[in-house]
Length: 296
Image 1: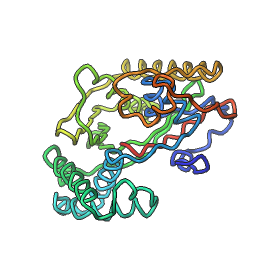
Image 2 (image 1 turned 60 degrees about the vertical axis):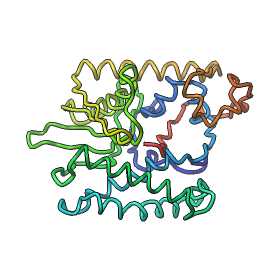
Image 3 (image 1 turned 180 degrees about the vertical axis):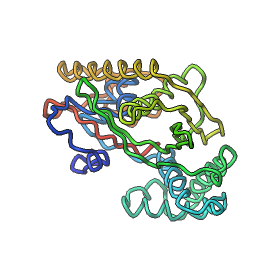
Image 4 (image 1 turned 45 degrees about the vertical axis):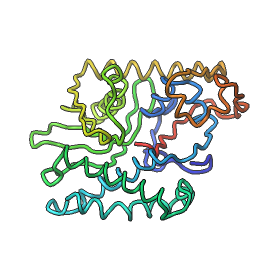
């Protein structure tokens, strides 16, 4: 997304009348800062456009198919139908941004065909984990936001919300990658607890279940939150925001070298790898979170 483009969150967010919002934060941007403050800076302050990756775009296309699948009558929600929806979903995405097709040497060539086949494999795996003919989601690709007492605006997009007859809420998120090692489950659940916090603050109900569906290896991660969990998440989010503001005031956006550097698009300008970041742009006092994720 270029600097001039309006983010989805900006289009869908509601004005907060009479309140001076100190800033906005999504789980993805909070996760960026916790992983590497410099990555947060590159994505949110500098707004450096990153090249599209086949893995990230696969996630976007698969998410679109799974979203649209539930527009169909239950009996038509089959693996075959999902496969037929894949090519149109990809073409719709390319129509919005022709640069996506440049991921492949030649559109329609072997690389594109192999990539589409991998998308089909991910979709097929979904049907081994859930039976969509027995599900009627209450919400899909739902934009959620809430304003904390600290005047920090939390916002993001939830893949799916299921509501049981008794009112119990299940928050579902699809991941096209593999499930994390047990050591990294807490990091994976942070996003879900973030969403649960927003839902609790807006609806007054703690979600009964948080469910991560990992389509990369066909596993599910489920977690039952409680109010104590969500209060702790709120404190963590506010602590992250305070750290972001301190970094903004000091100009000290330090890199955090680690395994994730292997997939980072900014290594060439990262001082941890001998690079030089661009000068910090002039901007207003408030840091605006754009909630713009193609990788879901």
